[in-house]
Length: 610
Image 1 (cartoon, one colour):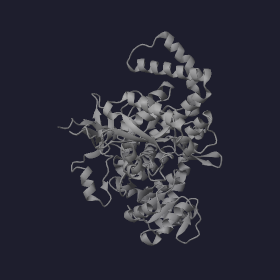
Image 2 (tube, helix red, strand yellow; image 1 turned 60 degrees about the vertical axis):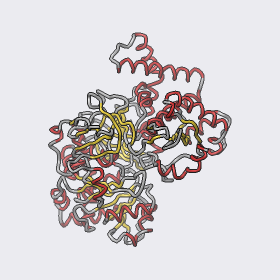
Image 3 (tube, one colour; image 1 turned 90 degrees about the horizontal axis):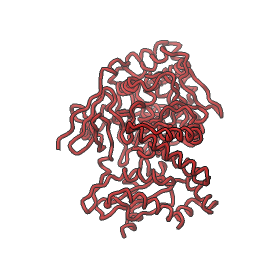
Image 4 (cartoon, helix red, strand yellow; image 1 turned 30 degrees about the vertical axis):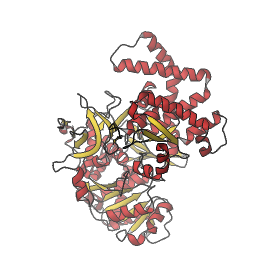
């Protein structure tokens, strides 16, 4: 089969951009020095920081790195959760002309050792004593690592210093060489290495994705060219900054100039939204699934007239949305009903998210269309986008003025896309990586000589260039009857149908039928247990009970009624625990590691085929 024609977005929109992230940052500071740049929690309050104040600290930290002997393009690691200091450190690394190696705080010590050794990181920022311990445990294996700088840890070893100490060293160097950081910024070009992000991967050793300064400045300029964000916006940022999705939102901030409230504590997202009241936020689909589940189950628990009002409100909201998308008039009576329900039901849901959200951006995995439509019926727009670590995250995104559910939008300005003969999505553009660090053979497997990246995802383009992703190429499997199955499409449907679901993992490769492992959301099940006379029992006892089996069976039957016969789930089992990042069964962006799960639960799967 031949590939599709190339779809290209206008490159002229993003031609004029700074040569490096350091220059982009300093340009932003010069343009709006007194505007708010960041907010971050200090105790129970939020502290606001201007661009000039942020720049003063970044400059001291960058000079401190130079004082430690960091040279251009040498790697500096950051092992920390998302917080204001992460951003200061990242910007300082690039202002020093060096490159950031990102490390998820959940990464186990062995993988941390591999990442720092493979990247030859010279300095590492470590959030606390837990992260410091991972480094000291393998100190003898890290001959390149000269210093560890800790945010909150205890600097009780000459090898480990505090952030304040690093800034003091920077101040001393700046007193002798006032222009040292500016010189490093001026000496950094668009093709220099800015970031090494080690893909969490669903199999094997992580690979270091080499991203240039031009990739990040492109991302910021491309999103700015869409005119969907400006200085008046306020972002809430909780995403892991070790992930490309978090990093691209920082690039976007530098280009557009809005302020960002930063707090990586996932359990505080909803509370923080109510206080911060942002205008937009990026998130992985699991966050929207959990919010949808929480709202639906809480309303069901109330029952009675409130539940009936809630259900009728969404029936009306979804119908009104459908008519508007089809370009058909909304009947007068339906519009009046919607106005009433908007005041009684939908406005309260919006207030849970701060009441000022213009849109959310969903990425890192596929968002179920029904969940996106459910939020939109409540007046909350979720724009789905698409990209990979290998493309600096953003490659496609829907637009607020032309959002198409089920798609990830059109290609961003300056990039190109085509669909290969086997359905694989290929992209080319300034955001595409330089290659995998010290892995020329693996680079050649995915990146052609003329710059086309094989994404590994299967998709299709509509007549207007909007992309729909159908599944990961490696996740597709074929039953023994010869039928191809796209498991993620089945799994996302189930999570939209069942408000108690956390994960559904479908299996069936070379088998005569499909089976699934089910995990249930601990928070939602606590509510369910209270409502069903099982309060006080352990999670494992609740989810393995006959009552829960019957409840899940009903949702599986609903799912199967939507599927083709060969896709339907013939047998399934509920696990007595959820899948987690810490167990290695989920990536830090909350995607299931299928091979890990298949291996870990091989016996359970085999029993389903017994």
